[in-house]
Length: 292
Image (cartoon, rainbow, N blue to C red; front, side, top):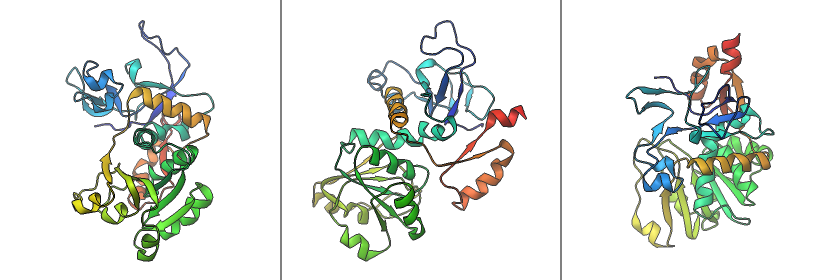
């Protein structure tokens, strides 16, 4: 299995039926490379929720082979699943937006949280979380980062522009912030409790799950009843919305915080990733590595 699903580069060749792109265009491919195109989801520009969606790597392709991802010198894809990258968006720092960016952008829009004046919480300041802060701020929200790491407060506020910072295991801070947030994007994939997070929501508040912890959550219904609160999930976005997100990012100068590495550094990067030693995304320069 060859991974890679945040892919950017230049179009080198197009098929005779391609109308969206020409050779030399800046383009990107995210998490999807195909879907059925006939179901309700596909017809609603929600290819990401198509039951027959084909993911960019290690997916079952229409010919029975496995999709091979983007850690390669070239990739061929249906034009429907290729995104145009605006000229002012850096390819390297824009690449992670094709997964991390749309994963946070879509729920902000769908759940009515992309409005000026909203109070938004972001749980976890990692690959998704730091991008969520940037998008929420661009929408005009007041952003509170909720983290287990007190050492991230300075970068959350001074570098990323968050308005407040809560240490999730600090009972006094969490108590003081109860009922203050319109919505929360929970990006954490480690095992944790969500009832304390729900207590931070205002009446009618929404907690949107974006991470996939290994242990299922315990969710007492009373916690939701007292405040008519919502716990929901969201997974990336359709292609129309992904293009919308990329254009919005270019307009508002939103990029991921990255460290560019060569292919031969991948194993070291994986070791560092396991230690949370990255701020906040590794980006592999495949083209120059292979060229060298």
